[in-house]
Length: 114
Image (cartoon, rainbow, N blue to C red):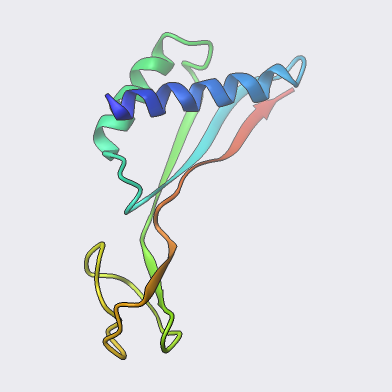
């Protein structure tokens, strides 16, 4: 159900953005989904496909990019690709790490036709 709500939210944002632009049609849109976003990609895509099929955007191209996680160690400043959600720095062994990317769910752009 979580992914269905997210899919409805994406369409709602598209509706809102297009309502501010008169005489345009949606040709496509780009989404970014982070590896650690908590979104089940298959369920989300299925939900979004189903919603779009019965919307004014049925012919719009959907471009989804999966974003790999990247962490940075706060102790040694090493950037690294994590092996798990919670892990330590492979360089110094510290657990004091921060996520740089990989948690996003972002509507990156709308492709419109005037």
